[in-house]
Image (cartoon, rainbow, N blue to C red; front, side):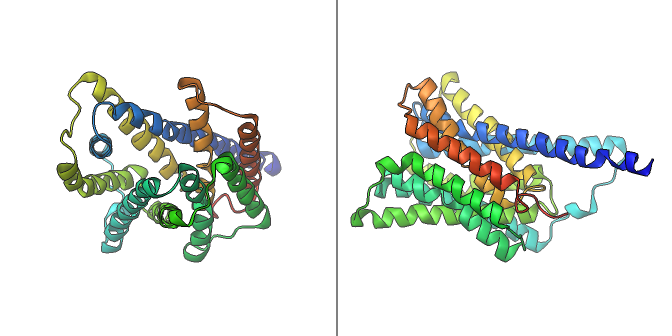
Length: 317
């Protein structure tokens, strides 16, 4: 009888992992819409204004979310969780998360002006390597051989997608270094957020992250953009969808998943994003999709599957 009662536990864990993976796929899908939504938004306002509106709208949504949680807790008579108080170290981590993400974004955008898109994509796709090393050094993660094989397969497939357009030019070394720089800081954000997830909810982390990033980019917008806000409904729609789908839903799912999965695996799973973006561009903008790209997509999926089946994907509880 004892064995019968205990047997559903592995099945329950497997089901919860499957649900979380489906949510993670949804999160990556929503994030993959960013490039398309930004393209539509920049028909009405500039790139910096697009980023600014993305973050302040997301801040407002997360603020309403947190406020509703507080009101619900008070009406039900529940006391606030004791681990939601902010120590100085927590505040510094929140500021660090917003800062490294901003540096990563600026490095990425700047690299696109100094090197080819193929080179920038290739080097930025090395993020999982830095996230894995950082998780091992700073968070005590252990990654077995199976995870490492899956990681290098996935990265190899992602690199192969743009390898045909790769350019080797000494004049582009500065841009290549910036793209690599963006990968390092993007990985750093995953590690910081994973650390914060040990104590705080996804809503709290993302609210403060979006708020700080809004404050950081506001002076830039004032000096670089003539028009800060869209002037028509058609201009507001892509900006609002960018904030809701990519920054709120997509980022919230990724942050929530860091409670269960390691930052190395999450950054690896994100390599599905260029695949989804390329497929959407093929469907919406009729951009070319070759058989070579399709084979690379298969390699990426195989690598993620191998990494997921390893011991390094899930965090030890």
